[in-house]
Image (cartoon, rainbow, N blue to C red; front, side, top):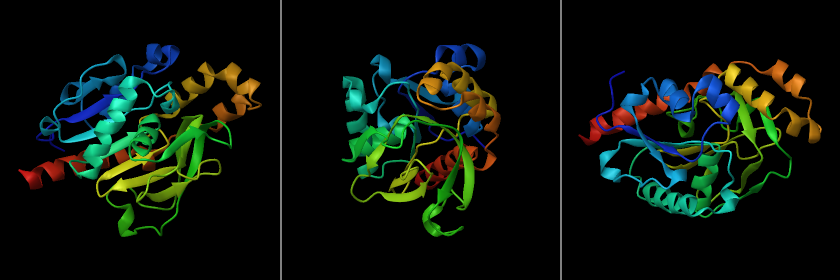
Length: 249
């Protein structure tokens, strides 16, 4: 795959937990790898540190990262990012993919409700079930349908999707695991940028929290697996950006 005409922006809403970052790098490293690109071939805006958002005309697509923070904290940078993203979605300006916090941020910016998941923390390799038949046109171009494992690590969720959003998938704990916000804009509550090792690092880093919440971290660790089908949405997203840019140019 060639490099997109305009770079994909990784909108950084936080950073990996310190122990995970020390072992495996940070979100932009994993996301760029998943896109089939190097970090030098993407643009990174460190929004959570107040870095300015770029001119949309200079980028071909956006991936919004996860974060250890909470959308409900309503940080100034987060609210500004949510409004910026909502405007881009409403104008179908470019392909956008939100991951975990990014998924929630898009929903919030578009008028949905985000809050603590009443079903509790969801963590580990979890089955994501698509609600439409395999091959349904509404799943294209990122998803195939069916049921596939994905890596989860979240406490907050989209409690109420924004008007017009389509629910594409669910898990046992998460009724809004995948949302389609617009023709080329999606949010996924899971982490396609994680591999099995990263997932296990997160479980280890949150071991005491999981125990306190009544979850067996050893069982979650042992159940962690690779998630090739849903990890693959990052590469498919990069191809969509490239196609969109080719058609526009």
